[in-house]
Amino acid sequence: MWILEKNTPQQPGGLKQRVIGALLYCTGEMKQLHTHIQDKSFPLQLSEWCLRGISRVILLNNPLSGALILAALLLESPWQALLGMLGLLASTLTAIILGQDWEEVSSGLHGFNGMLVALLMGVFSSAGDWYWWLLLPVCLGGATTTFLSSSLAPVLERWDLPVSVFPFNTVIVLYLACTGTSNPYFPNYPAQPPGAPESTNHTQLHVPQLLQGMVLGVGQIFACDTLGPSLLILGAVFLFSPILAVHALLGSVISTVAGTYMSVHYSFLYSGLSGFNGALGCMVVGAFFIFSWRTHLLSIASALLSAYTDIALSNLLGVVGLPASSWAATLIGTLMLLLTGENLKEYRIPTGKVTSPEQNLHSHKQWSAANTNATDA
Image (cartoon, rainbow, N blue to C red; front, side, top):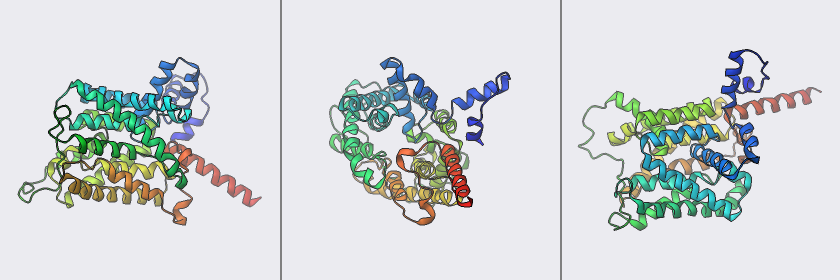
């Protein structure tokens, strides 16, 4: 197993063992690096926090995964990468100024919402790339997510729920609703509903493009709509957790297939816009529940519900030109975490103890074995 091999002490000597040890060092949360960097200079620490913040967007906690995702953003659009990093820095520095919990700041929990806000501002801006006026709302929007996150955390903690991307979804909808499409300084494109007019989907579905769209569904979490960056992002997920990578791709596949049955416009299917909410919905269950056949079925159900909810919200908000962004996955994922069935309760991981699915599974097996031995004694 992934985690068992990682925890097994390596004997010195063999090149193969050293290579395997180096690869395993880069997986999971890379806690050794986090410990090692704590006594280094502030800029170096901030760099690690920001890379973890990038990876937190997609439920990871690995600086190397964050670096791969940043490379994907640079490959997709250097302007988008700049905006994302600026939003990330604005939200992280705001958390430091407010005196937020140091462990949360250093693990990137106060950065990812700001990054998402900045990315979506860039996507919907009709002023084009390198429009420097946009840096102002990007900084303000990133900082605002930290205030919202700090306010929501005490409320959601009562039910052991994460803040998730509630701040991002709230800020981006408010920003687009305030600025509109004809603002002289911050003009935006209106969001289009995914429902296809009767005359547009009469052509035959192009299967290779549909299959590519399933991979792009993972990339669209970061607003990437080309294959290369999307594969890099999927690779970043795999580096942190192969189980979570399977959940991401599976969720995107399920959501895209669901879109074909709901007569979603083909452009949404081919670009991955129909897949990213399903990918996130599936990953939430994969991250917050111990992996088992029950929770695997639950993750499939979460992906389906996220897909249908996204279509409904997108059609509803698209009427007024607003995007549904990731509201669907956020709401459905939160409902999944609130489930109280006895058969699922033992698999639910407390929010503060969530690590990689492999580590969660390993810890659960150790706990079960200890309980069995205690019962036998």
